[in-house]
Image 1 (cartoon, rainbow, N blue to C red):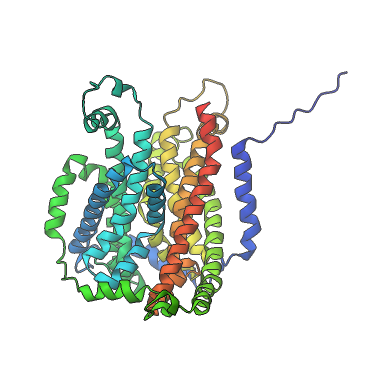
Image 2 (tube, helix red, strand yellow; image 1 turned 90 degrees about the vertical axis):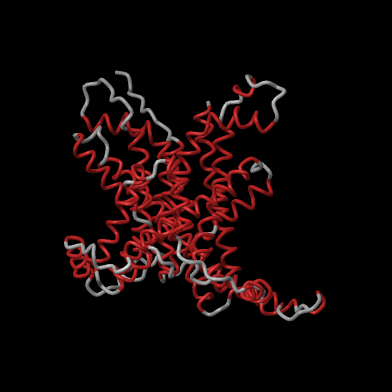
Length: 499
């Protein structure tokens, strides 16, 4: 009798990456602060549930104005970002342009708002610029990628005597215009979330009233505001067709709250004194600089704030990455038509819509009330939002796949045919979102979690703007490094797709 030879199947690339994510999470979880520190989270949860059952849509006094200003900030911020970012896409291949854009988009909108707050105060200019700058850098990168992936064949059919602008417009831009419009509308959805979150630092958007309602325990009012916001995001494709964006922009400019006169002395003082290291203020020449004091000031910030903040930020981000992967797999399963009848699959997709509509910052704020200040609320918030976003996108792909004509169970068809088909794309999206997870993780410090944002917010509160600026730069550099690592991990996936 011949001996049966055992066959060994080597692990695939994404299997190794998946196991690595889980292993890293298991190693670092003992060092993470994931304690529940509230006395009775179940009681608070039951009060919130009652608030959602009895949502009060008339409790907010300035609800209509809050909705209008949330829309205005988003519309004007996206429009200015588009105007600045689209031309940059044409020269994005230059290392200086791509480097500057990577740095600008790595800084979260709230950090930009905290900087502009010192100059413009609670003016619409603060909120609009906070959205415009990172969005312009993002438009530049994504538009550049979309245009580069388009075919060069149409250029050959254009008369060679045509000027370069006409050749580029009709040969390249025209064929990717639908993709550019679709992406612009997606950024508008992102801008709505950012606009709402800016309310947490005092801007007159929905987030301001939502934070106040939840902090005061008015859960009926808070629940109503949350439902309105979800409805606003969920129905965006119906009330915001691309052809109406121009009209919305005109209405937004007309209905924007009054912009106060800029005090130029504040701007001059901010640039010439506030963000300058204390030891450099009042120095008249290079020889007057006390380098030892400057080194001590800088090293104290790095060792006492930037380094521990970065460690906490990375710890939280890696745990959130593993949790997002877990949520993605399960959320994709509950919304797949390959596993459930159509009505139940639609119900699953509605749950995903709720999960992806609510910004991570607002989710973390709500979980913080329930569970107390630790990393756990942030991990849950990041996992739910990012897992829902990725699952929503992958469900669109998997539902388009025809099931195999084989006599095997539904579970086996899903596990051995559908999942292997979409898993590489699912992981690619997960690593794309990892950059966003790190951005959001840093800003959660403002809620009291000991990430980089905690130290940045503390320095702003103590009017140490130069310290805050150094920490914001550290946050941006950390994000750029994460983006670079994620791209390297995705390269083998791209090569395999190409071959």
